[in-house]
Image (cartoon, rainbow, N blue to C red; front, side, top):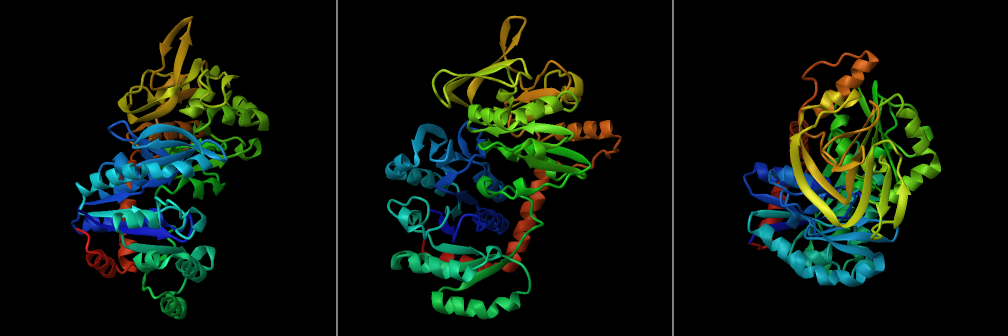
Length: 495
């Protein structure tokens, strides 16, 4: 059996995901086989494994930090919100169905065997499993049948590190208040406290830490600084990427619809010199960028209607006459001629597309889940710079699209271009992460603007992320008491 340690937080956004990733990398560097685990994740950013199974991107990031391939058993339950009160429920990488929040709350206890089975799979390949909680264990209204915080900790007999976010203020109240709301058995599982996202002189915290340890009865195992220099994927519901408004010399705009998904597709561009990635939720915010991306969507028909109602569709179609527009997955479907939903997977019925690409989409019950690689077919106009380039990525969609050409219907290829030079669409997520595609697009945009971009200026995105994992581990090694954390693992008598 593997040894296990769990990271829980006083709230969503306390920094659990990044701390788990950092612990995975530290332990990997120390020679352990380590794996991440999160029993239930709610996110619209997802990934398809080599087995064709779906999981949350946060656990993919943590697996990369651990130096192992992502496996769906690292995230056995994924909830993908479809509206304010319901989600698509994915279990062991496959769609179980759509449920309201109340339906899922009543049903989730049936998923305990799936959680235990997934955890046992990881025990077979790992020396240490670093587990991430969700939200806060002090959400006492959700304590019944808990499968993700203290309920999970009891299920797998895990000691807990409790993390608080000092940047939001009230960190001592966060930590002590959380401990007060735990049962005695739950509190006994908390072996260390972590103060996260600290800015300033740590000595100013010393008196507060003494009182915290005295009142809480639990040692502080680290005060972690605010890591602005670390550029890794964050939880999609709490990302700060949407707030960035600065425009670079090359300005890329991503449409931020209400159910935007897999916006990690565009992270690669953020590490490129002179390139900005902005998320626009209105025509006014959109302005006149150098390229527009229509990203994935968990509710394509509703998000298309949203764009139509707020004037975004008209603005994009006007821009498409003079700048490139690129749609991925749901965005690609929106750019087509028509979306039909005969099985009622989303809104039902049929909706006119943006009529930018000669593609017709029918939403279907069966979800396409696969990794894919190959060469980009011949494209025309602006996107000709991508013709013949190698690509790899993954598809994850509930629709089948066909390209209509002179009355003959044929399956769409990896890249579908429009009737004029500035339009392109694909189903492939992660298409920019590896190879020359992202750099080729940026260089072509730079050429149009008369900006010189040096060859080799862009680091391979995989190498870039590796450097970020190493920086993260360096920082956490300095500010966490790793000797004490390893001691917690030893004293837990697990394994």
